[in-house]
Image 1 (cartoon, each protein chain N blue to C red):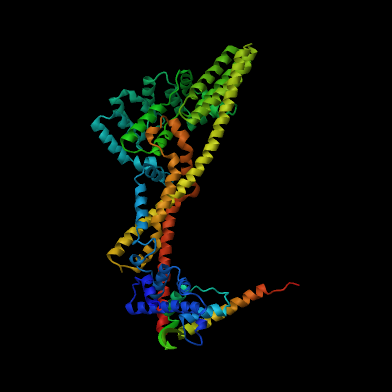
Image 2 (image 1 turned 60 degrees about the horizontal axis):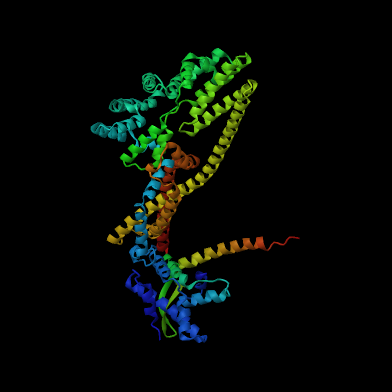
Length: 543
Length: 96
């Protein structure tokens, strides 16, 4: 004879109900078991078979326990009384939470979390880490320590150009080799800031470099002077080339194209940014890349316009007039400048440099053939083919790289958003569980939340692992990058895609509407719950 | 269904489970594990009332309909008939 009540009691306890009600429920369920057992025995089943069939009616006793409690009390079983695998009484959930927290100890995971500021932030480089206050703090420390590099870093990144100029003066005074930072101020426009003295300083310090002259020419290549030049020349020339007839633009351009070097100080800037970021403990390739991206480069459209002026206006005119040597010299000047620009640190400089070379070679080749220099013409033809191949290779590499990086960025973005959401839910669960441990009957709403959110810690662990593995291929220390070019090649498509997520989905604009919607939904749910409770109370009263 | 089974006489949980299986000829599968929480919920809502009674020499908890339960059953029947008629009109249409 089986003790059915004991069988039920062992499986259903603890059941925090009033003792009489609890015993009634145990007795009723025991009768159900006994009835099924007797029926099976009457059907010819053995004792063990009948017992098995009887118990099989209730496969999940924990589910039954929770269901019974919910039905009787109209609320969830107290979270600390639950016995499910995700109950706080079980170690699984705490292990999951601990492992989730342990993920924060991984450098790659922390770096991956940092990436989330890129799609959500307006301009994380300027707004967050490199705010005016943080840069002013770096400046104070640098002045105290006589750290010229940190001062130069402030000069390059301070959002207030006058503050930046002050830091630049101090940095250059400490170490004149840092004069190249003057380039940052050379692209400002009067009357807010007069760049003339900075350009002059740069030209004096680095007279063989085309860069300061290009910056000087840029000052003349602004819409006002450009418009005036175009009007004066009428519509005879394409607008950009018209500016080349203005001496303010042409004279510095002549010097730029004649200069033996083309250096926008990308390498120096990269090394300085990398060193200071490491010094400040910001091991963030995204910040380093934003620095590389914000590096001033000359107006390449202006340089290309001047090259077209050399080739199409001066060179072609000289060629038509029979002054072949003069035409050759103009084409050669443009081609050599293009070759120098092609050595620049950014992709756009390489592409524009190749375009200028290509254009000049296309004019040089027939000229050389006419002059009987077939071998030299053939050599340039080969160079032209190389340029075509380089364009195609660049396009193919970018195309494949962008597709792969875009997919990877989607995974990182969505898993990251999931980690943040589940992280908040897990934190909420932890707080509520602690409160309920301290005061079991604190609130049925809190108990409901703890019951529902019990999935958050294990889900957080899974999402965290997904997030980490999605970001893993892009995990780097800033010290692992040797140049801005390498950084851009390895990470730029990924970061561009990640930043696009923000624009593409408009998530930054959706944050506050989402918060409002949630608030309205919560208020609505509370109101509906209140109305339902009231109607039930009225129904009972009528009964 | 449970309210309908209790319309004319009080029944205990085991009997209710058996009746559902028998009357639906096995078509409606009603898991016993969800029967009791459902009965307790109906009781909490005031639609049924459970009382311990002795029948056949043993104590059992019998459930019977309350006035509120009877009214709910009537409402639900009207809705069910209207719904089943609508479905029948759709599925029983013959096209010439």
